Image 1 (spheres, rainbow, N blue to C red):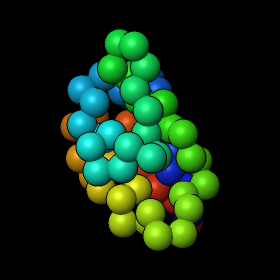
Image 2: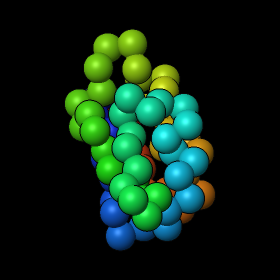
Image 3: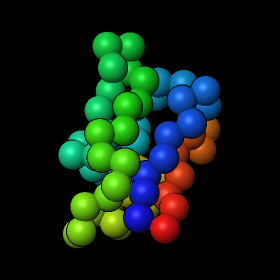
Image 4: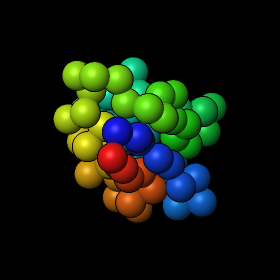
Length: 63
């Protein structure tokens, strides 16, 4: 499973980091940076939560 970020859609709300800070890092302006593109075992549900909480659909999960 992969967590992918479309940085052109990110508006810097920072909500995506709350469910899984081990997968998402925020830059100095609050924009998301994906730490782990390949989601580690056991973090799949957290990755889905990150994608679901983004108001601009900047994150998506792929198998």
